[in-house]
Length: 198
Image (cartoon, rainbow, N blue to C red):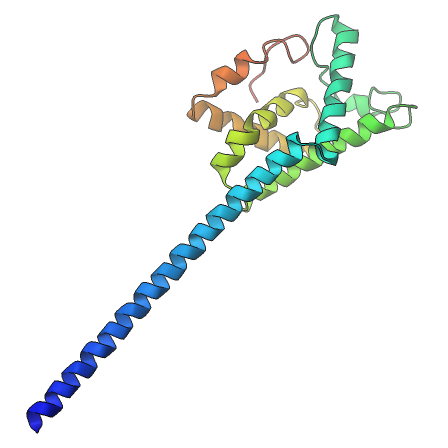
């Protein structure tokens, strides 16, 4: 009888240990699944930024229109195919981006849409809402390029995020051996000259 009781207790102990091990394994699997879902969401959010920037949307339209306006102004000023690099003074009365000048309100609005997009992208990276490698693989060049074009725009608060993001994109590009390609693609893009150190 005593042996039977020991045998039953042993079986119960094995069952408890087995149930505990199964619970630990299940908790581990659930944690792994949650991490994988989180990673997939961060990748999808990074791809959403790319879609907002490149695919037809209000943001993509603002980027296109503002780029065209800066290129037209670059050609007008320098007589070559390049982009004009706006200054804070261009936002002043009678400046190139003064919204009170008839016809310039769209360019002024587009400037802010560009800055707000990069502010959103910067915040998403800061709070780890997006995958950094996917973000810089897809929009890193754009972050850096617009950082070059708007390097002298400092007054709008949203410009701080762009400048930080552009510097971060440049560091990523150097580390991942993309920087030389980025520079080669835009030797004359910035006021007829190449890029500057951010």
